[in-house]
Image (cartoon, rainbow, N blue to C red; front, side, top):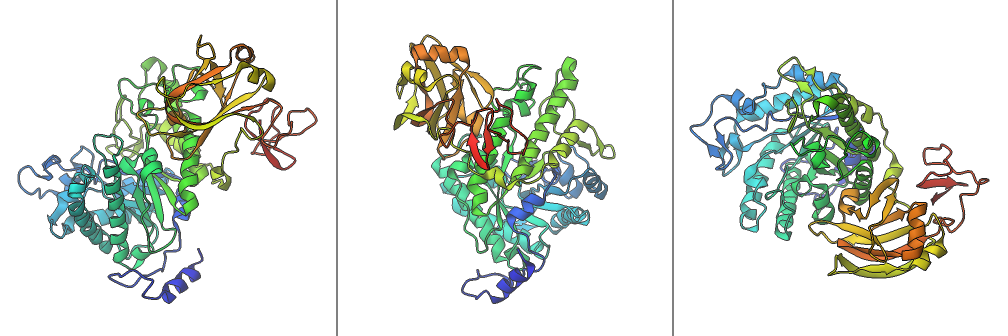
Length: 579
């Protein structure tokens, strides 16, 4: 937004329209809205396991010091085994191409008066020193509250009022201290609120939403540049799916200055590096070994599109506050598996950049092979890059430019097809809908036809669609956007989770199609409400015309001529079609 416009708007804003603040709002140097800020972040890095460490004598269970007050301020920062952060470390991160740093901070061990949530002056000065080093490198900075277990572990009505009181006081103190900083610094209200990592109850979600509103109101009330500062609010447990379904974005006194944060370590059975983890991810590596069945390239694309459609359309920015894959490999296949981890990071960062999301990789300075090995820079050894393939993957992904069209609605592949069934019935194995589609419908549609199913997610323990031959003799092989399946299709793994209606186009090989013409299809599943089934002829696209004729030139979205057998969105005579 134009700086002159913002300044004039602030000057002419009447007191009746302005929230009551400690000092007058100051728009100077605060021109960027949320989406501009997040789009400007090409490569983000986390100063992990440093300022949010608890200190050796801090007891997380009780929220108190085990012995006496710890006077060694260095121990507060090095309690999890990392060295004290230095200016040289921040410089090394910037030199590697990162232009943003997320600074996780745990504040409560350093509170001197819980009635006012007053922060020990030595500690907040130390946080300021690190923030200043980042800004001296011209980095964007996210400052948050992290591992505040008094808050994160208690999303319950019984403690709601007291936690909100403390949260308001804490953020009033933090925001007041940093009030004069310009737009490069933003605040993130909380971190991963959760109860044993389970899906939130209605109570959990409502209390979480109250935390977010308290944070925004507290910062805005301090006035000055904080009135216009970009702020970040979190989905429940920083899980994107929970946010898509239950998050209430706080009301704000200024427009377009909020971003939504989620974390992404998905699929967890690949990214965690645990003993049971898969060593390969993605369709591109399916010929190298067994890939994670819980998600692939298309999963990221589908989820990020949903997130963009839901929140960016409201003027909100998107922050992936943490992402990463723990270094894990089999010695005999180390090179190819590390290449695969690089590919995962490139894919994720590229897709984030395409949508204008600000993504911050988690680096905890931990190296080796297995779980929680997210280190990139060795802070104990002059910031040498220990896992170069991590850094290279992020650098390559960061070259992708923002694409405004990436959040546009996906073209409905069922338009122009024959509607075989409509309703709104729950799939729940033999307790729910089991829909039979007759064999002669497939014979009429012709080889190359697509079955398009429309459904909404029921927020069950899991989601599954199964396709059986009509005589129940076997599960049906099929493909979805080039990914091959047999019988089971798991929408939550493929699309993430949202409360929007979804659609999936199932395609069949020649042999399978011939069997469908004899037996038909039975559809069953779990955790979804089926709303429509459409069969699309091979010669019908979304506008009901044939676009596969050899004399009809077709182009992909990148402008290159589409091969005859290319599936997806194509451009013919300036219009979009699906085939």
